[in-house]
Image (cartoon, rainbow, N blue to C red; front, side):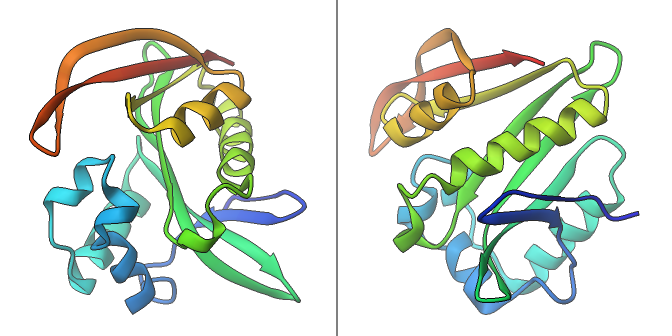
Length: 176
């Protein structure tokens, strides 16, 4: 069963390791600007690596990877990803991570829509709390989390390194 959730502008669905893995997707994964506030910036991603990652998530029982697709003129363009997990089924909480790879679509409200849809999916899976972390410098991520009713629950001082300097990691949570 393939779960697909739709909003007015986007669709979220499980990625196919065959049809959704493209050079454009690979370019996002290797674009420093796209991933400067994520741990992905430390890894070089091949198409084979990305296919393997998508297959692993599709076969996982506690991590769910979805593509974010923009609806435009009857076409659906893959613009980024959102992942729920790992899920702790005992305590019913999960991590949330996301990115928009198409930089010209940043600051258009699409990440906020994707998070809203991921919250719906999480509720259907019985998750009672979602958590997300971000670099203190990632103003956009803080804004979309707050827009989706995530609350700042903590700050890990000097937790991360960004451009050779120690920075704080913000921890957000939302009770569902």
